[in-house]
Length: 524
Image 1 (tube, rainbow, N blue to C red):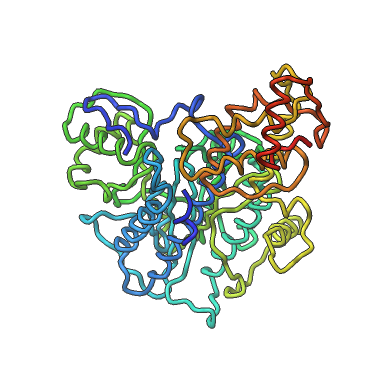
Image 2: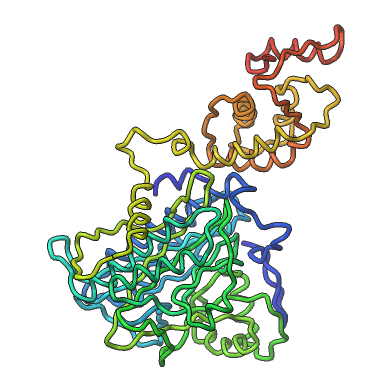
């Protein structure tokens, strides 16, 4: 996590009866950013992914016999806030923090268990199957993760029986799903492969559970993947196709029972603000909504993390009844069943899917009498495992060697080369067309290497290998690229042809002066 220290509140909500606007509620048409449009967005996703992975490992380390679930949930949330506070310290307008509150769901509890101080707590025992689910975000770019552990287990003792079945089924279903996360794949393919894997271990996916596309400040994006749908859900669920640069949180939940999750007497503590508006009557409801808007925006939150959870509980019913808040109910399987969960966040990149969250899992620690029989699924899982980076294998392809940010730059370069420039001198060397990068602001942003930005664009346009930029410079480059690409003429020839200005012209004088001052400004 030390690298994050090197990387790079909001306007107050209006006091009233209507839902106020907040920076977290960005207009999707004008302000939403994607990894294709913002070069630093991928860095923010990965920063959030590193934080989520780090935090969940910290929570897992405390999942021992005698531990209390409330303490574990509080630990996870506290760690997320501490770690996200370490990044983008100087950027006051960058929101960051909890994208999904820490939930610790034990045995037959399926999901969303994150108790308040006033709730009955749960103590962990040896042999319990514990699911930890959480998420972090940096500037609204979300990374979610979930993992399942068996309390008291050790590498020296193999887990058998139904516990082994559900853990192996959930793990392999997750791996198979990852293998399908490519541009052009239909969401139903993931639904089907999860079902196939679960059936191989005599298990059932939890009916109707959704995996969502992620967007900036939006945890439940437009596209989704459903697992084990009933007939009505299968007919109503919208079909979709994965596209390049999309981001998904793939959530796999497998049950030893029938996969029927239902609410019981545990009251809901997790909510998410919707975009509905309504004139609330109760003071407690208005105060709750104001605090949520200020602290959480559109991200899910736990009542435990608000200033006064008791007062918040008073305001919840009115907000929920008028659909201002969306609840995440605590769900359960039958008491004698157990459920396992694995969740990872994946970026669909030009050089293949990039998994930014998810912990390692050792299937050899589990012994099951069941197995996957479908040969195509076996091949898919094998290819998914082999596609993971192997630092010891030097025989990687040229595409695999390219970092994600360079793949995005390559795409933008192609766009630029296809553009028609607005400069009147079609043969003007690129060096001088990019001079404005140095002169964009009267007061340049501190810490941004403008010369490196200029040099990298030159290198890329000439087909040369660019240098990797630090995150702050990368962020500024992303902005400058959008501002200046209409002013940059890109000719198809690489390198650019020699250009001789008219004798005695101002351009000739400027070129001569610049060449004398720096070799970097020489016209190739």
